[in-house]
Length: 366
Image (cartoon, rainbow, N blue to C red; front, top):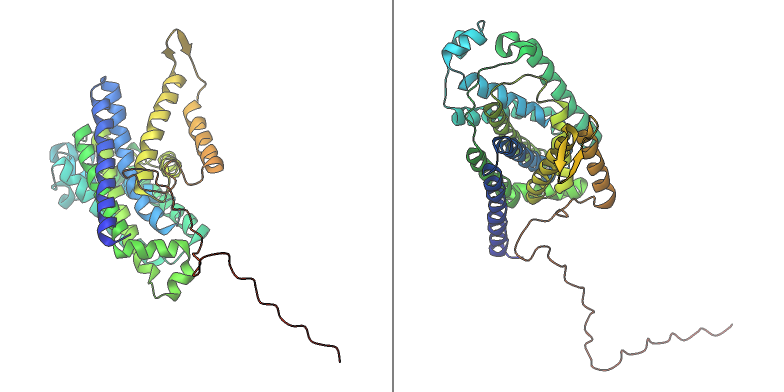
């Protein structure tokens, strides 16, 4: 496909994905207050899943530590969005330079993403040299380190009590705007030369090195951009919830992001969007059944833990029956799914039946 055709296809994918997010937001915001809160929470996770896919989808390296960047972005946003007077009562030991800082809620989200990206830039020097299970376990160690630091740094984070009183300024349509920007960034990186090189290393790292591709540089770029988007999602999270503790953004959120990306299809931005929407809807239905809900004349009262078990089963079934996810690793576009062209038989240079193979004369006996 030509460069122009690829760009048009990317713009079509962008329009479809943003339109899908807008439709979901319109449906969610037109219902009850509980449905609107669920939609906002789902959109926050959608932004985080898109950021997660920027690194995992292009590099093929699984990370269990991206929620650490989400948590860092949440705490940075909380510190900046808090009113200075409230900040003095919630964090009385906070240094004066930080206690006087204040920003508007959405600006604080962007700064929270930049803080996460700065931390990711430092960590990328040793981490992006690793692949496979070593990279996955090291990223999990990063998540654990950030979690412990947030629990023990009482001066900055108030320890396990967390930070309360954050203005709940996030709205559904504000989250839609962040999701649209995240989709643009993800598709732009995918279409860039760095994204193409990184996907080449995903398919065959040895061949990519042999072709002169500096795999480590491309991974660092994806890692930092991914951390920025995930950190901004963490900022949206705290603005939607109004508080943050170290336990909120930890193992459970990590599992949720992995399920969303795997179910949707980790090799495409469309997979991140579709997976986040699908898993949010299913998990909300399971949660309501777990709490007890009427479906017509039938009252369903599920056991405790039904939502977590249900998501685990969805992940298991997806890995067995459709490892490439719902989207099959392809981007949504007009006429999706596109059929692969059939391989045509080589044409004969002469009409008529092919010539018989020449016979090789046998050697006589001596």
